[in-house]
Length: 335
Ligand SMILES: *Cc1c(COP(=O)(O)O)cnc(C)c1O
Image: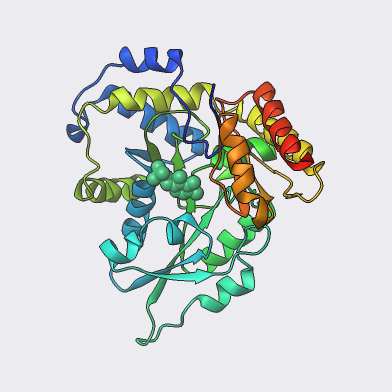
C-alpha cells in the first residue's frame, strides 16, 4: 500500500465519516436552511470560543474572506514572509481586495518579532497604506507558537488599534501539542480560520470563526467569492465528524512524526528537525535527492523530494509504515 508523506491533506474519509455524510440531513445553505452546516458552524464557534462561524470550501477562501472583512481598499495587513496568507494563496488579498501585504521575516520559531511588528505599523499619514490587521499562523511549518508570544503579539496589535487574524489551518495540532483547549489555543485573535481537511481528515472544508457581525460580513464575501454552496451538509457532516472524533488523536500523528524523525536522525549525513507536531524537515544532500527519490518511489513511498524535504504524518499512516520508511532511508544511505 502507498505510504504518502507529502501532506496531511491526502487522507481518505473513513467508513464512519462516509456514513455520517450519507445520512446527514441537508437543505439549501445559501438560504441558511442546511441543518448540518448550521450544526457544524455552531459547534465550531463553541469549540473555538467565538460567537459565530462560517463554513467554506477551503482554507484559502476562509483566510481571504477574513482579510476582505478586516481590511478595505488601501489597507494593509502585517504577515510573515513564510505565511500561507502571504506566500501560498496567489496574492488573493491584493488581487481581489486591493489590500497590501506588509511581510515580516519569520523568526526561527515561526513567530514575528514584536519589535518588527511595532516597526511596521504605519503612522497616520497619507503616504502610507493604513495598517489594519496582524495575521499570524499556528502551527507554522509544524512549529507551535509559544502561548506567551501569542498573548503579547495580539495584545500589541490590539493596543495599536489593529485587528488580529489567525490562520489556524492546523490550530488543533497546536492545541493538542500544548495540551490546551481549542479555545485557549486561539485566544487573542478576533478571527480564526481552521482547516477540516488537513489532519482532521475531512475531504473538504474550512471554518472561519469570529464575532456575529464579522461572520455576517464574511457571508457576503463568501457569496461573492463563489463559496455559497447549496446542500453543503453532505460535506459539512464530514467536518463535524472530524471535529468530534479526530482532534485528540492528532497526538498519535505527533508521536509518529517524533518516531520517524528520531529514526532518520540516526542516519549519517542527514540533518533532521525536531518535530513539535506532525510536520518536520529533513535536509537531504543535493547529490542524494534523485537517488533517494527513486528508492522511496520503488517502495511505494510518496514524498515531495527537495533538499529541504518536508515529511508529514497523518491518520492514514501507521507506526509500522513509518518503520518501513525509516528502513528504506537507512538502506539507501548505507549503500
Ligand atoms: C492548507 C493551508 C491553508 C489553505 O487551505 P486550503 O484548504 O488548501 O485552501 C491555509 N493555511 C495553511 C497554513 C495551510 O496549511
